[in-house]
Length: 264
Image 1: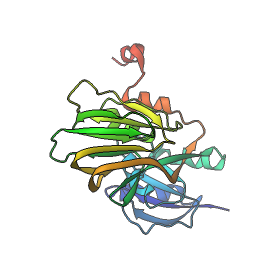
Image 2 (image 1 turned 90 degrees about the vertical axis):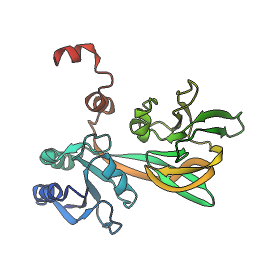
Image 3 (image 1 turned 90 degrees about the horizontal axis):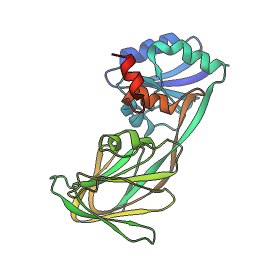
Image 4 (image 1 turned 120 degrees about the horizontal axis):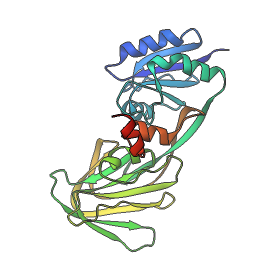
C-alpha cells in the first residue's frame, strides 16, 4: 500500500513542489500541494513534505500534526535534509525503512493572559532599541540582571538560528535545555546561560517590550514567563543523518585548518 503525503511549499517554490510531486508521485499518493502559510492543510496523510528552507518548515509546523520531511530550496538546511534532485534517494530511504522519527519540543511564552508556542526562540526587547534593565528569575534562584536591548530565549532547535548569529552556544537537538542570551548588553555580559527546560523562567523589565515568537510579533508586556510547551513536532530523518556534518557544511563550524587548506 502506498504512503500518502501532502506537499507544502514556500510561496516562490511552487514549480519545485510540482516537480517533486511528478518525481515521487508513482510511489507516493500526493493528496495535496499547498502553500506553507495556508491553514487548510491535509492531515489525513502519513506525512508532509515541505519544500523550502528552515523558515518554511517553521511556518508549516504551526499547521501540521503529521511528521515532516524537509526538502531544501533555501540556504540553510538544519530542518530540511534532502534536495529536490535527491528525490530518488528519498524514495529509496522510504522503501528501505531508513526514515526515523525525531521528536522535537517547543517552548511556550505566557504574557498578559495570553500564550504562544515557539519552535526556535522567543525575543523580548524594546522596539525602539532603547536599552532596558532586564531581570531573569528561575524557580527559587537568585535573579540575574542585564542592561541590554533585549533577551533571547531559544530551544536547542533554535540554537543554530538567531542565537548563533548573536554568539550563543550550539546545542544538539536532543538536549532538554533552554538557552538565554542578552541582546547587545552594555557590559561585557554577552555569554549565554543554559538551564533545564523543566523549570519556568520569568523575564521582567520596567518598559513595555515587544514579544516575538519565531520572528513574529505577538504582543507587548513588561513580563513574560517561558516554559516547555506540551506541543511537539516530528521530523522524518534518514537514519544516517549527522547533525555535526551539517554544522561543518552549512556554517563552517569545526571544519579545521586542513579542510580550509585543501579547498584553496
